[in-house]
Length: 41
Image (cartoon, rainbow, N blue to C red):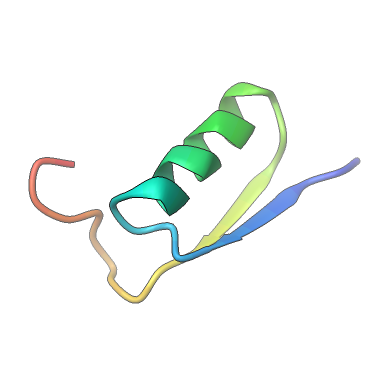
């Protein structure tokens, strides 16, 4: 099964891309510098 690895999945475009792949049904692995998504996320 195809999947996606998103590097830089903190707040911003990386997070948006990761969420889009997930909504499309792909398994997604995310990598971020921070453990949390940031304020308001």
